Length: 269
Image 1 (cartoon, rainbow, N blue to C red):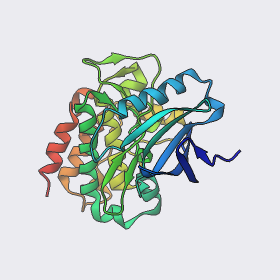
Image 2 (image 1 turned 60 degrees about the vertical axis):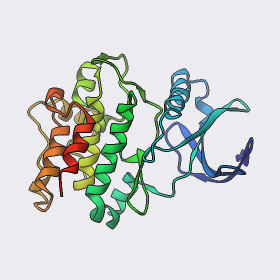
Image 3 (image 1 turned 90 degrees about the horizontal axis):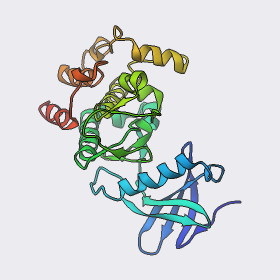
Image 4 (image 1 turned 90 degrees about the vertical axis):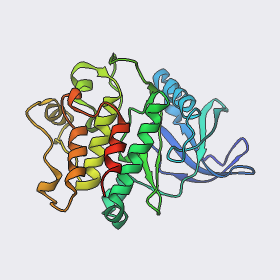
């Protein structure tokens, strides 16, 4: 059955959803145009996804920054979990990469800096994102950035934490997560590096025809990311250095804090 309203929200149209949620553009008398996220009906009984949906909303409700999607409210409506967020007129980075958008070519450094600022803010507030990828980075027409989807986010641990199940998308998972299930803020640094590499090259630093091939490439300590300047010498050497440092297989060779990435990117002109 097509959803036409949800409480005080009038559904305008269906938007492209994610793997576990349906998205709707809606209107509200006070909030104007908003996005309504609903957990897909078939997944209502899935305890982990249900818990992630609401815990992500609780974390997002604590974040107040122009580079983070604004949380409005969440709850259940007729037993359906929902979350209401600001509507951002934009495309995600994955779409823009697929389109070879001139917006990216002319504003890559600005977009990269804003991505780093957004992630640094999340960490400074005591959280990890853990699903950092181009699909979750919205880019407006003025090249401003909005980070979305906090369903996998969690409080930042004081020291590396061993976890039972590995969250996130395989291509953006750090080697220590794939190999030892060990997690701290440097996992987000690695994911940032993968997305940044794509921004400047159009492809991932490590790839494979299957998930297992990708896993082997990520875990291989002798296979380091190639310099971006080998294919595009016009890329600033400083940008190349920052991104490659984020992608170090050994987490101790990576940036320990995203704030340091922000610092180094701000030095580039």
